[in-house]
Image 1 (cartoon, rainbow, N blue to C red):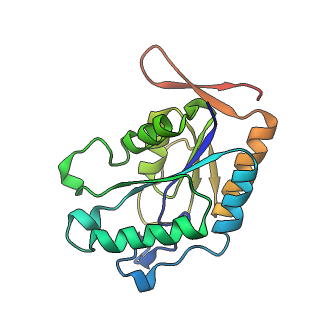
Image 2 (image 1 turned 180 degrees about the vertical axis):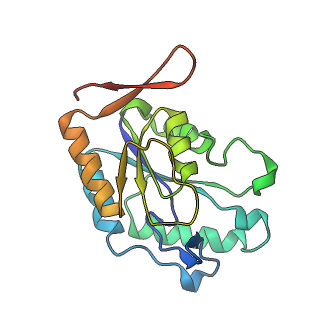
Length: 197
């Protein structure tokens, strides 16, 4: 079982479109750009021994705002430019109540099963409340990238940072120190427990 870093896409490794202090996934391939520090940051995490899995809600496909083929082309760029092991996407609309859409942990659990991941030794990195909630539900430590959105912030992320580069720093430093692991409590929630690695 290996540790992993689960990564949201837009606002974490892909530059989103910003309007009125809100972020939106790019809808045209021509507008798809990776953050300049994304590749180096993920390479650092890879060298530190982490499996890298992108887990992304893409409801614009289900809502008919972008073709699935365009999202697939965007993800091919990510596979070419970044050292990711798997990309999991939820294309359902918000009202379809699927099991994969964050804040549910379905994509994280599927990627963990596929890649042989130790969830308690892993991290979820995201820029929204739903990312942190999904990470907590899966039993991961969480890193919230705070981009100042006009929406509710997540409750109790393990770390708050400003970029993917800062996220890589705290994950690597946490792991070296013996990072915070989440272990199941009797009521099905998760407790924090410090263990050395």
